[in-house]
Image (tube, rainbow, N blue to C red; front, side, top):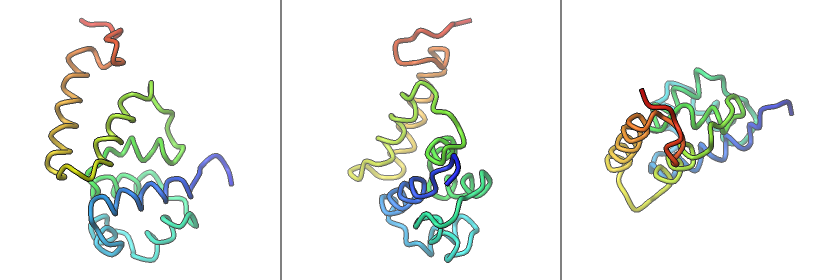
Length: 125
């Protein structure tokens, strides 16, 4: 069904919602979408727009870029930052606050190193 893979994004959203210990209704309310619409996204019956993905990302406290990549709307950059963020967000042994702290620290390290890959191959000013 086109270049988007709505089932893939739906499964990922469901996993993130469960990791955040939110019900379908709680996430729908937090993201400002209807409960049936979110259910259809999770089941792969609907393709969410970039705006809806951004609202869901905010409600789940994850990067919208991660959802855009999962939905096929954005090419994955070098893979490493998405993989690291996904691993942190998927870890059930740490709290949401700890996840956000780790993501902020990781982002600051990447910025210090020119925002490039983990080998530091980026250009520094």
